[in-house]
Image (cartoon, rainbow, N blue to C red; front, side):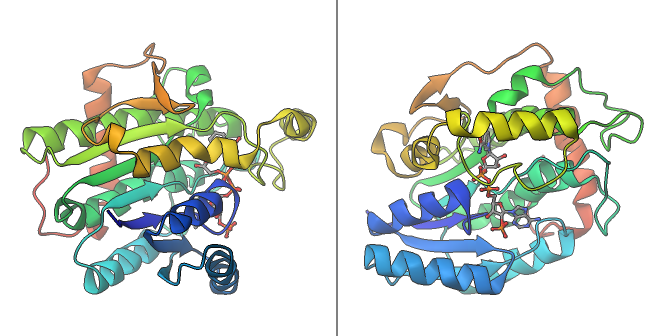
Length: 293
Ligand SMILES: NC(=O)c1ccc[n+]([C@@H]2O[C@H](COP(=O)([O-])OP(=O)(O)OC[C@H]3O[C@@H](n4cnc5c(N)ncnc54)[C@H](OP(=O)(O)O)[C@@H]3O)[C@@H](O)[C@H]2O)c1
């Protein structure tokens, strides 16, 4: 069955590979980018490589709540069904903490609030699918996240790019579980939510920005030893397209199979806290019609 698949951060790295491979399988791809020229070039490239003309572009700066709202409004106007949402875009930030125009710490904005808001605003379209799939992107580094400080979710008191990144990817696992549970509780068993990690894959991830001397060195030295982006992206492609996982929800995947995430800092209370925090941060930009608790 041909699916309509939205992939965020599809203009580079693993997102571009997912878009290409899923286009090759014949699916209708909605390619998200933040730069029109880059997105246009990627679209053309994928069309030429795959012969699939069914590639659309949506644009949004995922550092901006307003830009995300405009993008999801546009998608809701133009599509009635979304079969797969791959929240792939993500990054590690610089050694100095920085905030968006909304005043939000950038790692949390891009890796946590953006996928949360996109999913929230598009949940009706996913429910309209015969079998909707939400696929969130975590990282093996969630295992080294320090104990989250729920009084400092913007890392104002203590910030390092690596811990902000690891924590954001830990929250991604918890939020995916929450999505899965809510969908189940509301009897929307036909919509699943899973989370995956790619391992270390040689993309432009973390290569260009200044994460501090040691982190910069680690990223450069590790690059030749990382797996290919194709190998990294394979788990997301599997979760998007395989019939094997159609009834699987709330799980963490790596290397094409279920894995156990680190549970040290996990509790249902903490899961609810991060969910409530995302609800509060995104409150002015969420579609008002939906009742999710
Ligand atoms: N590579 C790894 O080893 C690794 C390991 C674990 C997890 N991950 C996760 O895997 C996902 C994909 O990573 P990757 O390695 O493919 O990274 P990448 O090559 O750096 O690609 C990141 C994508 O996200 C987009 N993006 C970044 N900031 C954005 C913003 N503010 N607004 C809109 N789009 C934005 C980029 O857009 P542009 O093309 O415009 O730059 C690009 O398309 C991320 O969530 C990352 O955290 C990666």
